[in-house]
Length: 577
Image 1: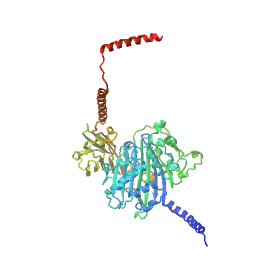
Image 2: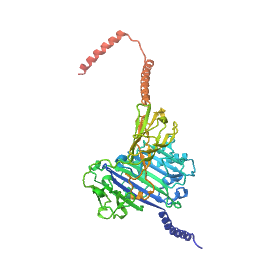
Image 3: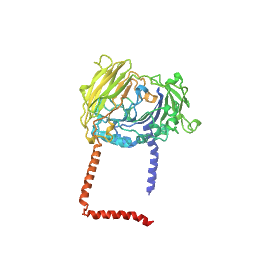
């Protein structure tokens, strides 16, 4: 008779034989890439852009596929599957990117928090319910205040945003899109810690080992994001996949730290790269040396492994460092890889090339009743540029559509406004949404003006810092530029772009801080103090009158007793001596 131990050993052998093939299939199902782009700016600053990309060969609409995870982070995958999210874009930004000084970034983001999501065409729940659950789940995952996003700050733009991935719908329906911002959101290490835990190597190895909280937040500009989209390897999309892109953009000022433009990883991050991430298929560093080839202004130490010119913009050349080719046992990397840039001579700092399109926005008005918004858009290109302009205004700034005007420094303004979409706000329900299609003349300056009236809020609707003011989020400008001027495009990202079409650039304006009529919140404290004082005085007088006992005394006897007590008080000291 065959014992039960025989069957157990047989099952164990079968299990062991199947594990390697299963692990191999899981390993081949997703892959992970790391990239760091370093670009010296004309102002003396240094632009550093980290990008960590995870590709997973599964259908994002397949809920069964999101039950088993390898490199793709499980907490984020479960949220996407639970709320039927097809595409997600989330960013936390501190500071304002200045395109007129630094050119255009790789990924643009407004100050504060920005969240947009495309939901599935066949959701298992209503989109509004899924959006509410998504904001609360991401709020807990990234320790952010996204739970404050509600219907009063959410819109569904029809023109300004389109799916960046492979959409499952031929005719895009904007009702599946939800977009919201929180300009007042502050960014700190509480947001960085859960963000870097989504990486396969955390911050232990690879490029993420450079993450030092003190160094990452002591910068002029800090933006970290999470971007998820469906992708396809072929045009017929028979082999769908999911792309997770975690980005971190920084603008350092080496001059402020060391007094010169010289820098290295140790001076910027207070860390070096100890080893390569074993989970990464590729781990590379790209340094923009486009100007250095012509002028020879700086040197890199150690020398790069190769120089890679851009195929589509030949003026851009990158020095490439491949961490997989670095022997960390060698002398120059025994204590970690520490890339350094040394400038040969001092250079005068200034602005870079004037970008073809940039903007400036400000608030107008005097007092606490009426005000206005002015947005000035500059087109310095030799050709006309068509843009999409989107403005989202909270409901308590009541826009007047009849005050909408477009002014241009050129004589004719008839053909500037091509189309307009306006959704009025509703008190305590939805914000105002304005979308414009504009054709900006070449070498022109166009100004968009619109007035508003400040609403009176209930005293319970004011935040704790009511006198700080209320924010109007950044306006969004989307444009198709005729070329990639002032646009950084490293090789890894460049290979994912469709260069048959012109580059799409998104620009965010300044956020506005506007005050509202604010009640005197100190009045309750004054009333309490005044009332307490009156009650104390009245209570004391009444208490004395009702509790004291009054007795009649003879005035002459009282005088005699007073004289006698005085004499005794004078004699007693001499008697003691």
